[in-house]
Length: 270
Length: 270
Image 1 (cartoon, helix red, strand yellow):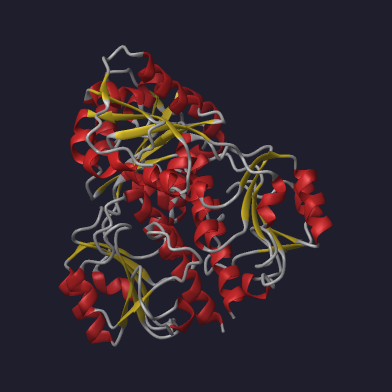
Image 2 (cartoon, one colour):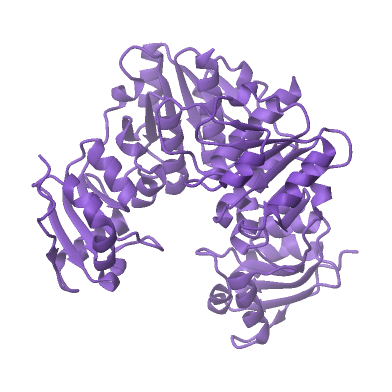
């Protein structure tokens, strides 16, 4: 039940404990406490039914965003406003956008990433991807191209890292995202469900358009420089490489993943 | 002619004018002075024949990268080494990689972006793209997928911005990149050459696989939120949209551009 827009956030001083809590959440960002920043991500979270525990505005942010955002919060959300400098100091973004929130949010179980029937599973799995921005980009692309879920393996950045949350631009709330999954568990889950594991590689004989992404597929992506770890590459059913006109080292994992997901969606539309 | 590896960089103090010069170049980065950072970009520049005027190592960077890099510099390059803290203070990267350079580098003329005959022109043009990191990503994707050149329109970030140079990971040196081109000049150049202008849009009837990218094409990309400016969209011959499973605002310009370039390369391979 939205509260009436008349209810105002509580002004807090620059030494208020809530600022420390935000600062700590944006630094470490461990689940289940998720740190969100910016009106777009907040709106996406609200729309997806994520429960926001605390919302913090800057003075300027409240003036600009309050009229649109305030009516969206449930009465369980604690609202506060701090002066611009104190707000900015509690954020990790270079250009904070005037509003931030803390929310309870749990990772999905691995099984959820395979969806529930139709369409055929299209799982995006990240192996050894250290850059949270790239992981966020991948989650956004997975959402855009109809993947059934995302799996961050145990050696990958946390999908709940604030940088990943920001880069995913709300997509984190729209599809199941499993975290810290042991590689062996993912491979076993794919085998059990008849899901083909296709690893992205810098060199492989298979081009994306020949990769038969129509069937149940788990797309395995590594880090830019090192690619998918060798043991995992061996466990894959196929390796696919994006053909390039010029021999460049490799595209970054976000870009390569988005292209492969686009290609999978294209094949699934036929 | 590579100099013998025995020649050592000159140690400079923490108040040396060269540090100020690097700091200024990394801050402003105006052409023709290009500020490069990291061994990978430096190697790409050397391989592409870019003339490096000054190279600056950190102490740690020299120990780690010197043996491999030193033999690659021409005798016209001034070499210096500073202590790690002074080096880091002169860079704008969060994690500078121990070596940086200043180089003379000029933008290409607009005509160069259309290539010279075969293959048919595939020009990537950025309109109103403010994020230099996204522009760098696009230049890298254009290089990877065989575009004949890149055109940054007058209202777009500079391709010579250090953040763009870093994101392009050396691709800036591998294909013609024109900068500050008035939109009307680009449209006129396309008309004169029979090049079809295809604008990327959030909504359009044309899907990428039906866009006939085999012919002479100029792919026009805007900024994530606002897209291609309306006047320019009107001047385009066609608009193309990447179909998405879920209605998300839009992919960022780097991602959308990479996908369209991949699709163009795929069609051109057939």
